[in-house]
Length: 418
Image (cartoon, rainbow, N blue to C red; front, side, top):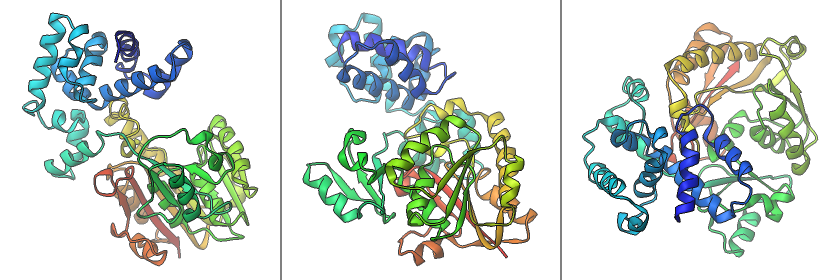
């Protein structure tokens, strides 16, 4: 990095490391305010800022209040997160910064600052995970999320076949391979400007993590059915389900955020889907939902959650969540799942999913639901996936993690109304 790029990175980190706003929102606002920054400048600033987030525990162990010393935090991110040799930075370091980086480098190999520093996880999260995992498992999880995620994409089967799309990408020199589990998935090892690629512009490809694709597979929607995506967001899973249904039937895409649903509409058009009906609701108790009571063949609840399974992409989340926010989410998840259950017809399927790694949001939430809803029974995810020729067995629940499966952390429980 050149000195100007470091100064810009420091300015970004002064705001980002307060954890008052999502990191990507801070970065976007900064770039909007500094329109003269070139593409390479933006790349270097973004990579270094996110490296600081991924290695924040080690930085904070050596640097008091990193947000108040953002230049040192930026330099530390270069050394820890981007493997830049201190010698290459000599020309821009003063004596104090040189000494700081030398101390930081010697500490890196020690791990004497505790499991939270070694695993790059805040203390509250380590303590929460220790209720369910060994220290070695926590360390493996922490290391698995310390690197950026690859780019997973989903082939829209209404427009093309995976083999054909994969061959085209590879013929263009793009390092692409079939995803190991999802029959629709392709994994790119390097980030490319996918939104400018002809296959994307034609609606044949969508960005979607492989774990998220598996949730749509578990829903098992068929042509002509009535399906509800209860927390649709911007609609990644909705689009996958629409293609799965071959554009036949009806999908109700509910969400409380008008902006997220607005983002779904152009994606529907690009994907060639006409069977999706986005609708904003005020809450899970909105009276407009009642018209679907007992009528839905499939209901997907991709519940609001801590997002701790997405830390490869959103490393700041572990510092913006807390035991208090988790407690509120647990009650919200319970309420939404309870409301969604009322829409499922006899023999219908209900899928509860999160992108969390916390059992409180996952298995424990599913067990609470079954105890309170004897009219539902648990379906075995491993059997469902085997029936779809997906070679993945994580037991009765789908439980994905970045260390073992190289996907985001995802959980799913599949219930059937008796």
